Length: 80
Figure 1 (cartoon, rainbow, N blue to C red):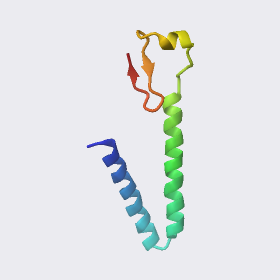
Figure 2 (cartoon, one colour):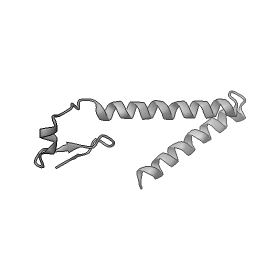
Figure 3 (cartoon, rainbow, N blue to C red):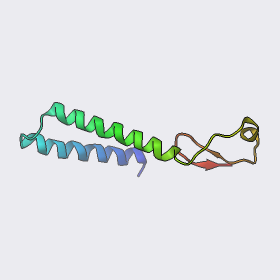
Figure 4 (tube, rainbow, N blue to C red):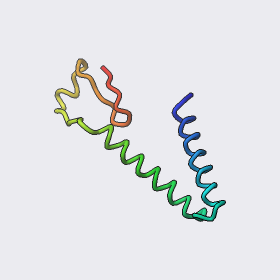
């Protein structure tokens, strides 16, 4: 199962839960859209902070060396 599949399942679960609340009359569909959008934004910001936490900048001399491991800014994966 890929991460894209997992996030689709999470999105559909949120929509199903939201549909339940809409059916009960507790929220409107516009409110559900705003809530899911806000949750996505908060998760994205939180993930970005988590990935960057503890990293520090390096000099260009060290960055050019092939024996120094690098960390992907997008995923946090360390590679040599």
